[in-house]
Image (cartoon, rainbow over all chains, first blue to last red):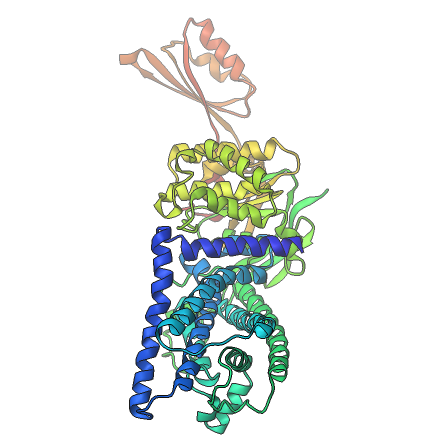
Length: 284
Length: 337
C-alpha cells in the first residue's frame, strides 16, 4: 500500500509541477482564471446562435443545461487528454518512460497520480466557470445543503470513470505513435455528442440515445444537473429515474469501466513490452 | 555460486514490417531489410555478484537489447533471463526493486524540473527516504561536477550535464545491479574519467554491487571490467577476463626500450626466452631503440642488467601487448567502427 501511495504522491507532485511550473505563479493564476472565463464566452456565443436559430425568446433552462454540462466537460477534456498524454510525453518528449517504467512502482498508479494534478487544475477551472456563469450570465444554480454528499459522491464517481477511460487510452497509447494524440481529442468529442453535454439525449436518434446510455458519463452529467439546476424543464430522457437510481447506474458502470480499464491497460502494456514499444521514440 | 544475472539461450527477434495491402510491393532489397531481425541469438551468460562485467560489441550487436530485457523493458522471444534470481518475464517487480539503468548519450529528463528535483523524484519511486536522498544527491553532484547546476532547470543543461544527472539518478537509488549502456558516450575526457573511476570504486568498495556495462570503447572496457563478453550479431563470441581474452591471441610478448647508444648487442640473443631482437640507433640523440620479442616476461630483468652493465641508461621501457581491439578483430574479422 505504501508503494502505491508513494507512487501516487510523487506522480501527482510531478504532474502539478508540469502543469503549474511553466511560468511565474502570478501568471499561472491569471491564466487559470482567464482560460475558463474565455471558455464561458464561447458558450454564450453558442447559445446566441441556438436562440437565433430556434427560440428567439430565449430559454434560460436550456442555457443553464448547456452551461453546466460544458463546465463539467472541462474535467472530461482535461483528464482524458492528461492521462493519454502521460505515456506519450514521457516517451517522446522527456524520454524518461524507460526509467519510470523500470522503477519499482505500479505504472498504473503513476498515471493516476499524474492525472490527479489535471483534476486539481480542472476543479479550479470548473468552479471559476460556474461562478462566472452565475454572477454574470444569469445561470441558475442551486445546490441544497442536503444534496452536497450526493453531489460529492457523484463527482467522485464521475472522475473515477474519467480516470478509468483515461487509463484505457493509456494502455492503447503504449502501442501507438505520438501522432495518435488525435485519439485523446476524438474520444472526448464522442462523449460531447452522446453524453448529453451540450444538448439532451432526447434530440439524438434512438441508436444515439442507446450509445449515450451505455456510457457512465451520461449518468454523471445527468445527476450533476439534477442537483445543481433543480426544476429544469429540459427533457433528458432519464427523467423517469430518481437520483438514487441514476447514482446506482453510475456506480455499476463505473465499476465495469474500471475493470475494463485495468484489462485494456494490462493488455496494452504486455504487447508493448513484447513488441519493444515501451520506450520507442517515433520522432514524427 | 549466486549470479546477479544469468541468461540461458536468450533470443530476441524483432518482427519486420508487416505486409499490408495498402503498402506498395517492396523490391527484393527492401524485402530483405524489412524482414525479421535477430537481435539476440542464443545468448547464455552468467554474471557473478560483485562483478563489473562488460559487454563489448559494435553498434547493432545486441548490447542494448540484452540490457533492455534484463531491465524488464522488453520481453525475450525465447530462452530465459534471471536477474537477482527472478525471471524477467514472470517476475519483474522484485527485479525492479534491485536494479537501475543509465543509458549514455541520452538527454532524458523533465525540463521544467531542476536537476536536483529530477533526481529526487526518481529516488522517491524507489522509496529512498527524502532526507537520505537529498544528502546522496548533494554528494554525487559534488563528485560528478554538477553541483553548480543543482538548481538549474533540466532544459537549461547541456547534453553532458544531463548525462551526468542521469548517472546520479542511477546511483542515488542504491541499486544492487546497475545496467550502464554506453555511460560515457559523448562525454568529455575528464567527465568520462570521473564516471569510470566512480563506477569502479562503487563496485569494488561495496559488497554485492554488480555492474553490467556495455561499451564500444575498448580501452574503457579493458580498464574497468573484471570480465568481458564480446558480442556480435546477437551472439557471444567469447567471455573472459580482459587479460585472458588478450592471452587467447597472444603467443609472444613485445618489449620496447629506449636506451643510451650501446655497442654490444650480440649478448641479447643468447639470453633464454628471447625469441627475437632488433635495434635501431638514433645518432643525433645518442639513443638506441631496442625491440625484444620474448616468450614471456622472464628475461626482462636480465636484459636490463645487460644494458646497465655497459654503462648505458634506460630512458623508457614499454611492454606492447595485444589490445582488446586485436582480440575483437581476430574474432570478428573487423574493427568496432
